[in-house]
Figure (tube, helix red, strand yellow):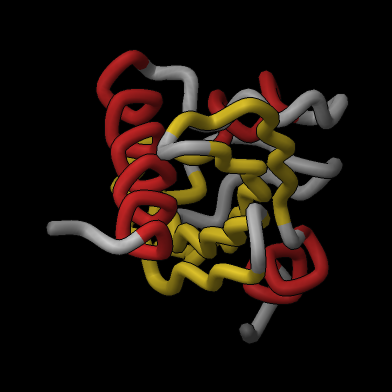
Length: 116
């Protein structure tokens, strides 16, 4: 039998997998999402870590992709980058009742710098 903690992790990972298959994983509400999708091709994802505290579940997703278009004013570099994305879920009785997602652009932008 699954514990509540396992159910919470399973619900979060299932949501991420389904959003990836549906092409909606990148939708976080941040203004640059369209540019991110166009600038980084061949994107792949991996759930890197999942943390649970009470009803809150935080999932860290690592997305890799090739920089083939303009992003944040930086022309395509051809570099493969690692983009960290976070999702915060509120899970109640194994069901997601709220989700919020965001990208860590602070670790993305330095990867696009010349010489990085």
